[in-house]
Image (cartoon, rainbow, N blue to C red; front, side, top):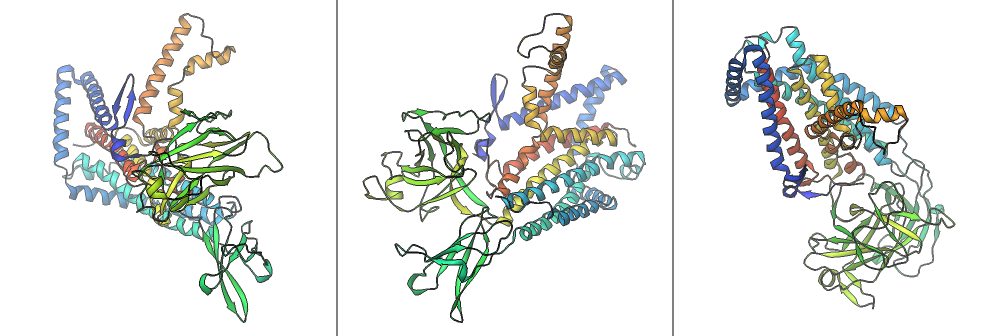
Length: 614
């Protein structure tokens, strides 16, 4: 899994400084600044609109009265009336046959098994990405249709008169619509999530067969070596497993396990029936996980052993990972903190998802590249002897460092007494083969703390879909308070597209060329680097581009980055979705409310200013 932003605590995340021109403002303060700017812009727009109709003095008075009355209305909001409006919106959603979306989803799942490739290296990722993406698409379409057409249709059909004529305030109608459509979407999302969970479990469930004739005896060198080895008989989902059977301790029955294939393994139990061994292959393990990872800070050493900020660039365009050269003093060092006996009583489980860059292929391109791990005390610099491992591309290697380790002189060391210092330990990884390279990023190596229930992590993944659904609903209701239904739908879809492709919009907003100048250079076949010839046409095009880029920058600042609300990668790659870290559940919830507050206020005042009925 690729994590391109730092994992922070909630406190660090709230006060992370965001660059704004030449200065950097803490995130929490930035929200208040944006709210003030939006308030100021809203007042200016309202004054201009009112002044053109009633004159500057009367227009200013009306704006001031409207602002005061709107604030007064907010403090007199009745939860009982809001609940009634919510129930009304919910019943309206059901009448519009929203359950058709659930039927379409069931239809997708019925035929999905024909097309999903379960024989690949990561079948769980394929299934989970499919159900979460299809759920997201259907829910967002439903949210757009419900939220954008409801209020304009009531106004055009004049059914809104029966509501506004009753003792109900405008903000209660708006809030009721938002909550009612959210309740409808939540019920539908819960049904889809439950069906998806069963679908994933059923799709990944498989078994293997193993008989006595599939195993051959193995010469034992010690009591820890297997006594039998072979392969499972049945080829299921395009794979089978290597099997090793070990002698049982203290006269107990033998036991066994398969190798890790397609991201999972099976435990094997051995029983006796009529004097013969019966081997039972258990259910798959490791496909659906929710492991909690503890990350460290990454630094590098070059081939001479000197500290450097980054490793070698081997020519890859994507600079997410740096590389270290094999057969030299080059190393990648992870500095872990908060390492204690309570969380790791049996030693340190280290997981590695390294990349390999080969300068020569050898006899087999799938041949593993040898590497080594050294644990070092950051205070005394005392270190363990190298633990060698084989690194393969796109494969997560698991290494367990026991409590009792040895130094280079084969002297015994206690992991927490001699290597870990005040909860800190350095993990150094090197490539042992000359002319070969290991690639790594900060989050490619981590300590596996504990495994959480997968079903709970699955719910967290759907929580990410829920937050995006709520934002889309609120966008739709907000636009529908001052736009016609079709226009509100287009505006909401534009917000969705902008939010899902925020990275592209940011790159476009920060580009050196604007669209008009770029089009001129394409049409006239001019070099991108060379400036245009000065003149009135060039000045006009550059002015248009400056205005476009200014609007695009403002849009980037205002729209939520819907792509970052996703937990799909966490769930599909088997990582627990953080609760109290950012990105995580609480940070997403706070971000969602940070957008909902201004959207509700804009919808409230826009609906108050609209002449519906008095």
